[in-house]
Amino acid sequence: MDTNSLKQSVVKSYSALAKSRKNETLANLFGCCSVTKHADTIAENIGYSKEILDQVPENSNLGVGCGNPAALATIEQGATVVDLGSGAGFDAFIVSRIVGEQGKVIGVDLSEDMLKLARKNAKKAQYVNVDFIKGDIESLPLKDKIADHIISNCVINLSLNKDQVYREAYRVLKPGGKIAVSDIVLQSELPDYIKNSLVGHVACVSGAEKLEDYLGYIEEAGFTDIKIESKSNFPLELMLSDPQIMQIAQKMDFDLDSQEAKAMAAKVVSVSITATKREYEEL
Image (tube, rainbow, N blue to C red; front, side):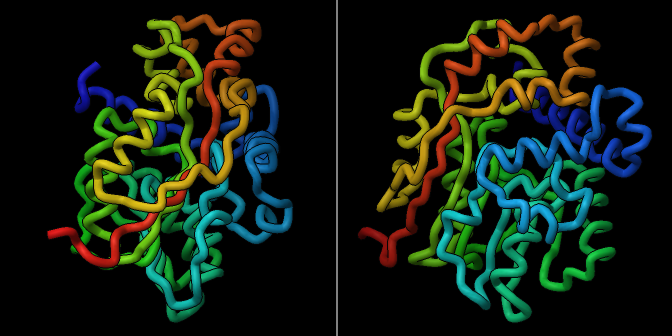
């Protein structure tokens, strides 16, 4: 699967997810349970409190994250924060409360439908310090050195060029700026049919790489003070039970029973990582 084909397929899949959240009654006709309840269950499993879930717009939590990157970052009022792969705006809305009126949050996403949903959520809940713009995280439509922080939640994993994503993050950050990322890495190799499948990519699974390789991309981009803040089992079974993902799997004639899900769950872990851009560039 080449990079362009994968991007188009993933954007199409996430666009379908965004459209379903605009009409939960319609979405539930295709699933076994409430989409919102399912998303909240996943969010609580990966580190979000019920208080936070109650504060954000109802349709912003899609249940497709793997951690809480905003909780890792020491974000201050007035800061500028960029959210890579912002989706319906969930993490961006959480951060917007932290940076306050003097701060700025920029969500970047490649799906027009996700951007429409995020903007609708922002307007409805009157978030005035958040912008959502269309862009590829491998080539950010942003100027150099504008951000104090960059966050991302289980999105960089979808890229086949993670090294380029981290180079772009480094470029956009101010000297001394920080990244806080939640993503998944492999404990052991996945079967080829998962690695090469669209449903695996949508579930943030098949793009996973070994931890040492993943950390290597961050270091090679120029970051220092790289820390693994947490490492835990990824709630893969919850993710793969998502109605939207299972629809995709069915269309692909992709058979994934619970035993297979459990076997895969042992192979991947969720990691939360922070790192810092150098204050001064090396000569």
